[in-house]
Length: 560
Image 1 (cartoon, one colour):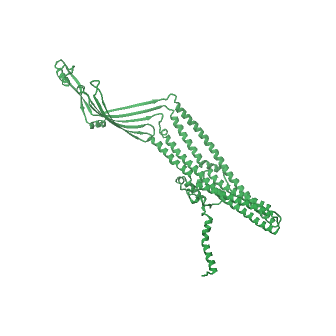
Image 2: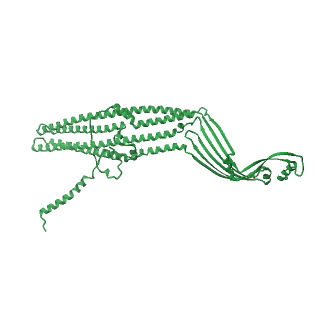
Image 3: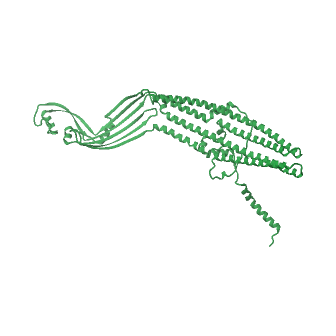
């Protein structure tokens, strides 16, 4: 069957129209990434690797506060032990063997104004075996259970005395946390400023590509006109060579400018820490914010005062000075001699009682008492009467149980207490004096460093203002020059069209226009970069972008 030619044509056209969008998309490459300045800054705050590292510093330093506070944590200590010993006796009083066990527990609590108190409990049981005659003759105690409860309080009176002295490490750790936060703010200021610098560089690079392409279009138009003039014989063929050479040169300029676009795109991707393997590495970045310009007006004195209040470097330096002031106070205290007071009170308990008794005995009764206890006692003169009648005192041993031991501790019948002073005077005390002298020198150095930092900030603010004012003047001059160069190009083009000029002169005016437009572009870029830098050196960049420290710590800052 023959298909009409018209129908075949419409069919082919339909297929072409259906496939055309896919073909154009394939040739156009990946879809561009349209990115605003605020989005670039927010992604950098969330994903920048340097910021991720710096973001970990405050939580790490915060642990040092807990570490310093732990010096006042109470502690509980406990001990337990068992011992056994068997030996040859050296006298009637020596045991044949001994065994025992003991347990102890102590609660120790340091105090923030110096000193400490403790409550200790100890209990031990000792058993001994003696020769039978030694036990009956001398009244030795084979089983001995003892316990004690002792409270002790120690308080320095000179060195290490006082709440402020003993909390020095805590106050310094708190300042170190604030220093780490100021360092994070410094990193944020630096990163945000780098993102903005890179963003404006990319905007300028894309504008420069447009400048290069416009200049190339002018050269191509000149080449087209020149070829026509050669064909009609109004100019020499050498003019075509001049025009062609200029087209080639400007094509190279377009290629170079396009290469700079790729460089600034990669810088921005690096600052935003685009993940490896992300398609964003191959997508061209199209900035949606454009370069702005308005005539500046500044109060340098007010800007300098703002910088002195808001620059995190200066705040960190002041905090380091505070730490040295605390260190100086502590080292001055260490020059004092050591004088401390101690008080202790303890109660004790055991498993035996001695009852004091008095009785009057005769010689017969006394002899019988002694002989009953030891028939071989040579002092008793057993069976040999002698004359004696006296009143004597003696102790009767009675063994109690363990429960009686603890009751004795509670009743405080057996107790002991002690009050004392302890003085320690280091001869020369050179170590403490040297530490104090070093701290004084470090404090003086820090103060000089703060003054140098203030001077550096003052110069940075003045330079940033000067950069903006200079860029503004450059923009005004460059724009006036661009307007004049455009008129020159138009005039020279008309002269060339009328045969009153040559291609070289037209090319020269076009190059002058391109250079003027390039200088205007660079001046506008420098102006916007200088505005961002002024916000950085005054410490207001984060505030202007609506970024808080809490958002930055969480990595979820939203910018404006």
